Image (cartoon, rainbow, N blue to C red):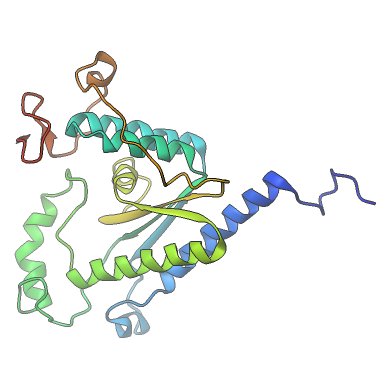
Length: 240
């Protein structure tokens, strides 16, 4: 009989890690192969525009969490601190986003412009001026739908594989700002294989935004930044 150290025998943690690695590759493939508007353009050699990046390093996830807490201080929103804790606890994060996108040339009018060319020309200044926002935009509406289909397909695949996945946008913002991804807009799938789904039963932390350890968190260089003198309620003012 083989010994427990036999490389041909996998148990416990090694099986769990293998499941995570396999899931990341399969989910990324699912996002890439998900249906997209204007598929004939891709058939004719147009470049892919769906970016997929997987992070398994605990050190990188801690860096994401640190950025999230700093951004939560700027926005005076506790939910960023909650997402920071999740980023540190999950096993991996898969980012799916629109990178180098172009419209499908349907001239559908969903963006409010008659043609795709009109939309691109009229909104170029907005996109150029949005680099210090959380996401860059605006994007083509159909490409945002494509992103949603890709993320939904990946999340469904995670469920079929028996892997817990939580769709999150704030973690994707952190990845953009830290240079982990290049997408203009993205969604993060936080992946875990545990006895209890980390994504559920999360409580909102009580954050004292004026406490020294919170107030001293560094600036992220991202807009908007909330006015500390304004009430922490919807509609509070923001510094540009």
